Image (cartoon, rainbow, N blue to C red; front, top):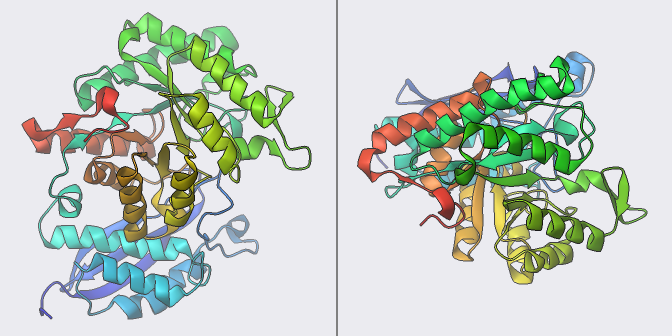
Length: 426
């Protein structure tokens, strides 16, 4: 083993995310120099099958402290990583998984393990003097389509919209920088338009930066967004998407969904979306059904040919759950959130499985984000083609977009904007 590139210190601390909730930050030192730092995001709308996020309980921070996870990083995980080669990402990640020894990382906490995993990756890239996207993939070149969540509902807001995210995608842009410009201009039109129709309180933002008008009807929210797009002059370059988070709309006793105050069966939900897709240029629907309904996901994927059906709570970035989806033809894209599985290696394996089976990969933030822009490097490393990281407001969102602008500049003529090929860009 080389005497260089050795991990010489690992240190974690408690920081706060964009909601003021504690989360984990990890530093990794290589050859006695600080080389890598990573923050761990956290979700509010979570699937039942996500890896375990360790919280302290008790009264401090309302029970959401992470000092137990911090302790695990600074003791057991640090002991495991010290004096190891920082570039051995897979071996280090799998050794942390083995050290935890539970199916969902509940002994050490997925937030503890992930913080170390991501900090190791960043430290290795810095040690080799490479940007993270290039360290992870020498062929990285695709800039993603931003899936701009400009109207918030569900658990991400204070209104009564059933769906969590009403998204516009600038697929007709020529470059990522043009795509970002288009979305920022549309958002600047949308905000005063929303205030004029619904009052100034409606432009307070949800967890991911979108407006929160007092709307119940899905079409009314979509029309608001479309009206802003039309006023911008960019309508020919825009398509639309939803995150429904339908698990949170499902009643297991009655086996029905609450959509717009109405009870719908699985068949009713599928017909609801068939009608919407026939009326609007909708190209992507995330979690249209609840997290255990593989058969329903297969049915809606068949019923909506040409529409991206994204599994978030269904797959939770878990290779085993994705394998079942592939076997059944359930969905055709996976939402990719590293904290759902707990190590970078496992998340990358899930993405590889998705691509090999013709599934898209949509890299996503969490509603509880920090200023750490790492997912910008990760989506380019994957050549993923699409990213969800909220509206173009607030630093925990804009940090990711600004990092993508830097990467676009670094790549120069080698950069390719995914555009209309966002699901299969390469």
